[in-house]
Image 1: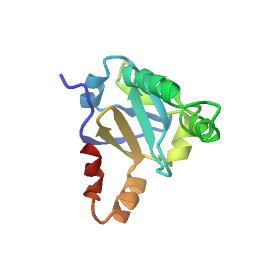
Image 2: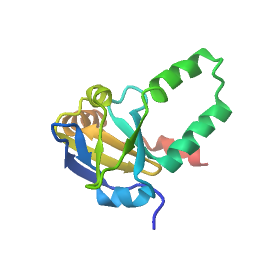
Image 3: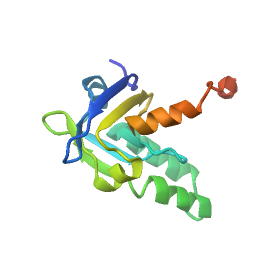
Image 4: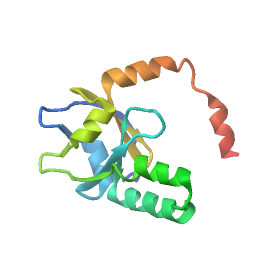
Length: 146
């Protein structure tokens, strides 16, 4: 079984703010707990972590970033503080906290993107607009692999 998330999945947010986590993504979780927080940079998306990768991420941040640094504190305020632990219910749904739904502008039609150790959750319209701004993928990022 894979230990990373892949794939693109559309799903609908209900009026109570719940959305079914796609079964192929759930299978990688190995737990009925997920962690949800704000997307990085200026992207209006949410990040969903398995409990395992959330703990790993938080521990890496704690080891590498000093809370005494002003920029680190702002990063923590933006990334760690809004994070919420959410239970996957018996129907495979997660309840997205209202503050995070508002941040990402989640309305009804949503898109899950498997992104290796994390899942992105986007409002479909927001993702389509952002994707339209990117004419080509900048492959220079591959230089980091060397």
